[in-house]
Length: 144
Image 1 (spheres, helix red, strand yellow):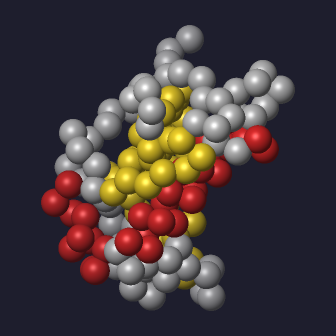
Image 2 (cartoon, rainbow, N blue to C red; image 1 turned 45 degrees about the vertical axis):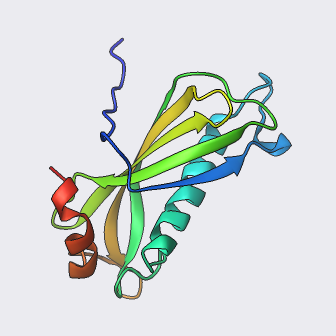
Image 3 (tube, rainbow, N blue to C red; image 1 turned 90 degrees about the vertical axis):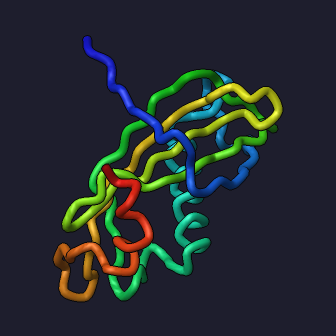
């Protein structure tokens, strides 16, 4: 079986920290996959807020997730403080990818990397929209 690969940028534009909560732990005693997706969602919201946006209003347009990839590198445990780095890649006419790296803040070890693909979306008209110019101008230079 082939493995999914996810290349990371050399450096990330933004980082935030989240604690692994007891509700994030699965029956295996470590950070659950559903919680990783929830954590990168929180990090994406914080990233957008840093640039003056929300998921519902990026210069007048919202976003809707089209896909997600999570690659695990190590276990995360209750109480770990995770540094979650965020960047934008693969900007297209209607969407982009948000790229994440989750690292144990204390040990410095990589826990996971993730990608969420989004398209820009008008929720009122229920249709895909072009990438807003303000967003494109902020992130186009790193979307190669």
